[in-house]
Length: 313
Image 1 (cartoon, rainbow, N blue to C red):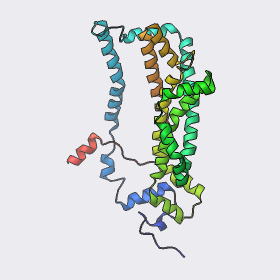
Image 2 (spheres, helix red, strand yellow):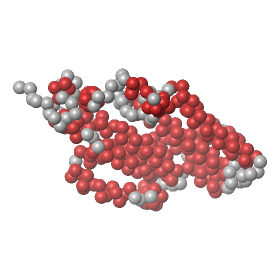
Image 3 (cartoon, helix red, strand yellow):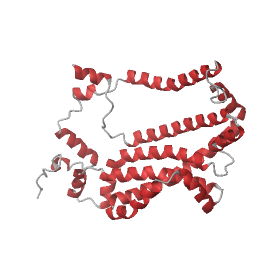
Image 4 (cartoon, rainbow, N blue to C red):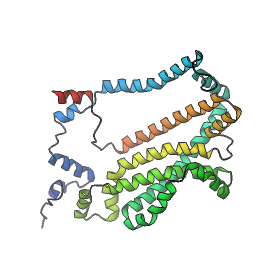
């Protein structure tokens, strides 16, 4: 015998019987909230592609303009070149290093970040999911994690040197520590922030715990999880610099240390620029992955000039 619709749910369960995925639940909820995706509200909220493209171009031109301004200030002796070298001098220094030598430094740092971030993020996803699903495990482990999160990165350096020596292991471990905590927090918060009505819907369809996690909890928590992954990736690059202070002979952190010890600001700023470029590229790759995985979302986008014009009318 068919059960009566549950008034606590945002839509009729009988309507969702044909497709009871979280995406269908969200679509039914939106329909009962009288949101017409094909109406004027949806049309006015679309970002004009031409205007947005111009803003993207302006965003790319902004750092170029900043570098050009620094070049002028240094060449006109407004800014001393021993404090801030001209961008052309930095580019010449990197060019003189040669592609092979510079490639070794970039490859060493990138490999350390990739391995450390992979290990830290994998552990964070597993432990975060377990703590998000179990209040008892969360009560057991959260006090320790709260204390460990407050330890600065450089405080781990002597400990890791004592435990692991000066090989690659302490460097990768330090990067993994930096990537672990933001990902862990995002996973726990993402699972805990899932709408209870979606969980109740899964219980109505008698989904087993594994199916409930895979079909409802995980898709609903993915946006916040990806935010944590992006934050963890940026911290992995930051911790990499501290890690390469541990008796490294190659890497961008080593370039920073070598430039400081030899009094070469052009080398220091060259390493900083390379770190910024690599960080931007890796974050862009993570954003691309996020858009591919979450392409089913019909999420709010920033207000556009077109939508504001429509509201004024």
